[in-house]
Image (cartoon, rainbow, N blue to C red; front, side, top):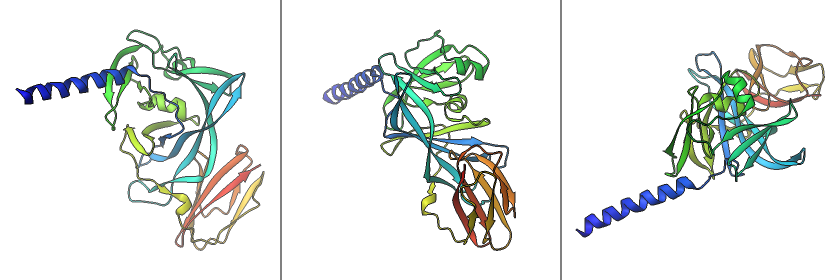
Length: 297
């Protein structure tokens, strides 16, 4: 009888803890959290790179305080039989977007720099039948987004979070953000194409994943074995590549890891069609791999 009572007590404690945990609001925005997002393409691998996004610092826009979302690039470091090894390029930390979270109303807003106004992205206070009043999301998906179901899911650390299902098949998760492809896409990917929010980490612990997480290398620790020179750098018109031995492939990425140019044995690169900013160039030859920064003024 004592064993039965003890088991029932443990079950009750788990139920009560889970219920209380589910009632507490868990913010999306935290300085110790990051999101890994992979961009998709039509290759056999299906992935072209991506970004690791995190919160760092804040700023005032139109009298409101926003958190700054920055991103490291996730870039392929060399070729592979299926998917190339990917690495985090921590040498570049570009500003990706600006988010504001109202923890009382349980809403997350993004400041749209193109329109000079903010838009609602996540509403974690909604119930079944409510509308997600996000102007941009409605445009992206081409329909009014209505919550069809709200359930509780368990994260990898055992904590419970609310999962909001929408009428177009998408969903989002409290404290995680866009769980399904589309909702990650319109928040983190401003470059067009498709993306997948793979993994969310907090304090170095993996809380959630959509696809199995990659074990990323650190590009700062990658050894450059080519004696390559990129000049003039910075430049507004073009750059030259010298010092490469034999045939080589070249690829240029923006700060978020999006592939924007690639070629073979190309020693002169036109920059005039690029936006001003910092880019990463990767050169792979029989002698090894070279990675470096290119600044387009």
